[in-house]
Length: 418
Image (tube, rainbow, N blue to C red; front, side, top):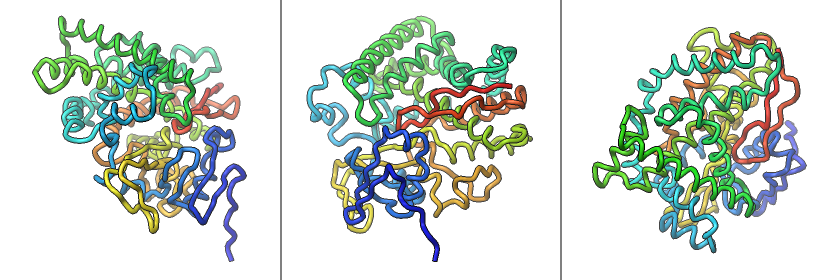
């Protein structure tokens, strides 16, 4: 008779009520959530996470299906502003809420369709592919800057500036503003974490106001001197009449800038960690374009940069036998658990780029599938290949630690030597 692994010490499961307690700030969890995910997929793939106060799905098939289920969506019932007002006094988050209310990530059709259509053309694979030479040039320039040092933290020196520079240039913004955009973004996304503090909220609001002012300033400049960039596209849509309001323009620009680097930074760091932990010559994973693409997909699967994405129920829905979500309630989709579900993958925690069951939900699915997925994939394919070809002797100088930022899953630092 096969023995099953017990629950990790930091996971407490009330089987009768399908309730789970896992403190997302417990270092045993956010440093390595995969033992907990394995237990949940085996014992409780549908469970109520007490710390978050909502039901969650862990299995690959369930998560993949719910992403496409039109009975669920991202838009809060009654609209963003009405929903957040019901939470209490939000005056200290006025600027943050103004940005979020117009974000296509928080909307459903027809408004979502209209906003996404405006920017989708810039992110389709054939357009993104034109950026390959520029991304390769940037990757080489970043390595040039630290190659002689013999040791570096790759998060600020490589993983962060590359996607930040690319998305800034796509938007028609000065590349040197990249670090400031990253700082504002980091402040804002803390509001998506579990139990943000008042200090987190104040900082997020301050950064949202500064970010919005920055976009309005550069939009004024682009109106006088339009170019072949995404900000000019958004401005033209605004000025054509009813296609894009001023607030939607600001929200869309901020979303694209944030999404254009946030997850890619985390995923690049996670991928380097994963590959170096395999030992041997890392160049073996990047022999040709097909091998490179397969390696990136396996990195996306085995250690994703986003571990929870939420949906709202638009009607009463039975998500599992005896579990009914009421209209307006939240559902959490656990991407990291889905990507390592033993029911969907052979040896789910093994790094196997040539696996036959290669798939993942790291970019979501359905109408909210990440618009920047082709760009993120290309950036990782180019950046990782350049990094390991230039520095094949890379070694970790310490065991990298993840930040206490569940559900964004990324490293505090990634120090390497060669």
